[in-house]
Length: 408
Image (cartoon, rainbow, N blue to C red):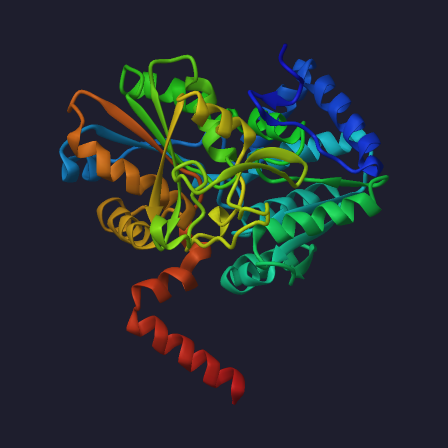
């Protein structure tokens, strides 16, 4: 018998008693909108008039010629309003909040894209908005913090623990427990307690629905492989969902950080260093020590620097339906630079993880095959991190001059 909210042995809703009524309401409302075709129609209409749906599927002709193997297509989620796939989930949850009659939204964010998307949605629908962000991520994603605040959101820097995404999520749950009557937690990824993994995957499924139709139209066939980066799992599951029953290999790429032997990474499913545990309301693979304490993670990409992973992906990994790999920080920066030079595309550091693995494998594939890479976000938010990683002297001079101007 399959238990609701579980994917194999993973998932569930491990909640304090105070939150159970709120989650009961959320499950009921989500079931109601899934059964109501007018909700999906309103959602698609909103995304097509407010965002950029359908997003293009771009044939990367130069990269294809460069590698000489499979034809490379790129799903352009970076062209969504606010610059990432995050808008898909956030706008849908905003419509849900309107139906529930609540007036305040909260969210966690790592790279800041989910925070900007949530602040944008709150401005559009007139909600009060609070965003929790780890202190480390606030510093390395300052442009997104600026935009969240300009959009009217309160950004709270979380100074607990590793001061990254998992700590921001913990802070958001604490807020929700204290303000659940008028507040909805717009969780940004397909993790956390049920129904969030199912709900976020459902809202993000628009990516895969479009991509499947587009690749059949442009290439005349299904892709041999699909690549997506994996932090919590929302962009990957959004793309993978429409191809789940097809003879298509699904590849998730996690943050290899400074290399798996260093243990300074966030590779849960691509390494043997994660174990099954329960945290943040659900059961999945976590990077934890023998006592169940969460380990410190590392990634050049703030949005992948998460200690857990979607329970859906844990199940798909264990059953072999999705293959997982890890990309190091250096490989990610190199892939980003190649994408810029060859195609004029600037993927987010998170998205560039998927590019790394695709670039490794495409040359050995049949020239008649094609692949899809999900460019889940755009890289302008990463300008400080990328410029520092590249060591661009002109950028360093610009920063020094700005500092001198401020101190004058």
